[in-house]
Amino acid sequence: MKIVFANSASVSAAERLILRGGSWTKVRLRVRYGLILHPQTGPVLIDTGYTPHVTQGSERSTALRLYSAILRPELNEAEQPQPVLARFGLSPEDVRTAIVTHFHADHMSGLSLFPNARFIANDAAWARAKAKTAWQNLRHGVFKELFPHGFETRLDGLSSKQQIESRGDVPGGADLFGDGSVVAVDLPGHADGQFGLLFPNMDRPLLYAVDAQWLIAALVENRTPGLPATLLAEDAAALEPTSAMLRRFLATGGEVVLCHDPAATAHDLSGESA
Ligand SMILES: [Zn+2]
Image 1 (cartoon, rainbow, N blue to C red):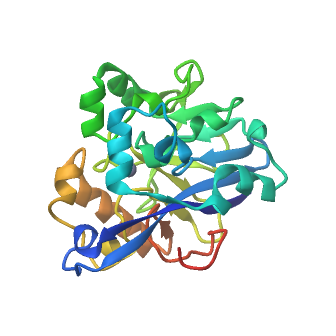
Image 2: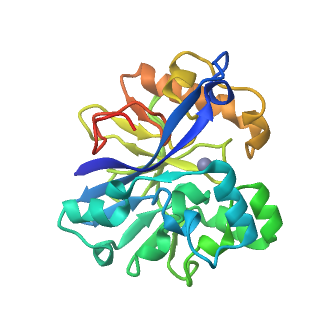
Image 3: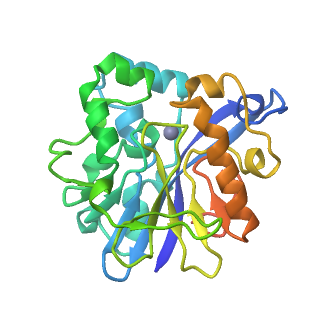
């Protein structure tokens, strides 16, 4: 099984906002998404990153235009999903499974590119998002217009998966493909229902911890940011326990990759810094 991460776009943020005791200097963050080449399931996307659905298009709502104008993601054309799939001889039609770690726009804006995909996502969080108004969702960074038609009928909810128990400081979670190769681990705090992905069978076990923090330094140096990061979080009280869980996993010798950390990892397609 192979796992790669691509960088869909860059966004800038003052270091101070994402790292306790950081400077006002802007950090150029990655917006990763991943591709698993699974021997039985085939190509599996992990989120989609930012796609033109957020930054372009006359049909976007005022709220989505405003979101794009404030965050100003700069798309990385070379690592958008289609060219990345093409590097592996694949087309969007070949993708039968897309994992959606949470419903923020920078994780799911490209889902409509994959007409044959079923979506592995947190079905309880989907039910809650569905029940909210557009403006309530905007407060949480969720845009219903970015969900493809028929999302719910194509949803393969986490609640239907077998649970794997945690082992010491290696967390457990939902066994996504029934073979223990990819485990969805709850990462409460950042967004409703957010989960990460544990790959326990790799030489060095890998946990893709999505948006549990922005920077690896916030985890390893114990510098998780305060306001306004905590204000934007779905559940601010859960941020620190989730970070502590990741620190314990790192201490077992595991590797943690985050969506937005700017430093290249061994799993990134492009080694150069974004
Ligand atoms: Zn997020």
